[in-house]
Amino acid sequence: MPNTTFPASDYPADVHVITHQDKTVLLIGTAHISQESVDLVETVISRETPDCVCIELDEKRYQALTQKKKWQDLDLKQIIKNKQLSTLMINLLMASYQKKLGSQLGVQPGAELLCAANMAKSKDIPIALCDRDVRITLRRAWKSTSFFKKGYLLVTLFASLFDSTELSEEKLAELKQTDVLSELMSEMGNSLPDVKKVIIDERDLFLAEKIKAAEGKRLVAVVGAGHVAGIKALFHEDHSARLDEISTIPPVSKAWKFIGWSIPILIIGSLLTIGIQKGAAAMGANLLYWVLANGIPCALGGLLAYGHPFTVIGAFAAAPITSLTPVIGAGYVAAFIQVMNSPPVVKEFETVGDDMASVKGWWSNKLLRLFLVFLFTGLGSAIGTYVGGYEIIKNLIG
Image: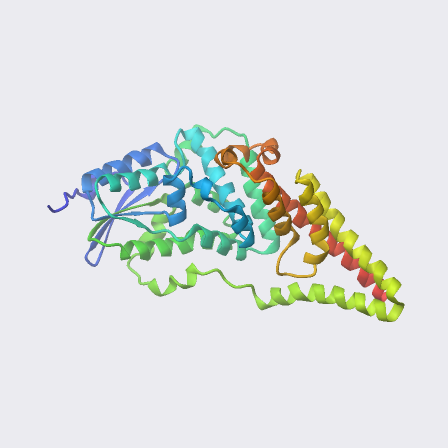
């Protein structure tokens, strides 16, 4: 039986009708923390019974929304081995930011996306997950950001968690009409244009192409309101050739590789030169200084994070070695030891969003404490590399 269709005028302004070749797309712009968006999605899908429902989700986020016990399958050891701990932390920071705003609006973040998936399932309508893999998005955003702006990004996200200001009625009304992530990005857009480009602009293109590629002639697409303008602007253009480009993580530049290897080469070369010029005793004294200069601040970072005793010892032992190789940092070594000896329990995964909003929560929740171990030992190692390297170079030329 053919689908029952309704004119665009029957729907609110948040529903945009796009026709492209033989497809008609009802593009619903939603706020990820709005009950009104949930109701609108349910109404449109019920009335239209489309050929396919396209959703602004990737497979990972879809599983997170639909499988409440997905945390039990999260392999932190593998995440650390793959050097994805910082990506996971930023992902959780953004999710916590949305959850905090959603609590003031009385709806869970992503409720309208979950509603779209459940409505499609109940009517046996195919689902198309049209968003780019969130891990690729976050890692591209992180790599596109300069060292100093990475700090600004983290400070901004952390500050948003601890801001206890109640939103005004006007701001709540505004957030109901927009996309929370887009709102956050627009606030940082002037300072972090590269991050906005990756998180908003690239995903506009990705979403537009994936929606066009979905099966069927009459589609309902549910996306954050912040993506609507971009999708509409790109929909009638062919950007399919760019999908591979924006779906990969840029490799480390040759310049950074050179810098990464030049530091250990400089330190080792300096130690050998001191040994040749001033004798083995002088080289040994400088080597000991290097070990202590790296090991002590890294171990103090582990202590500050309330790391496991083995984590503190491991951090002290690892820092002098990891500082001489760009392959792996002391923070990852310390985090791996921490998760082996003090793994988070399921309950702590489930409460991480709330625990992030308090200083005490960061030290009491084992998952957040793992992040602290990673950050503080990494910072301690960086300080130690500078202090130890400066002393060795000074002794070489002095």
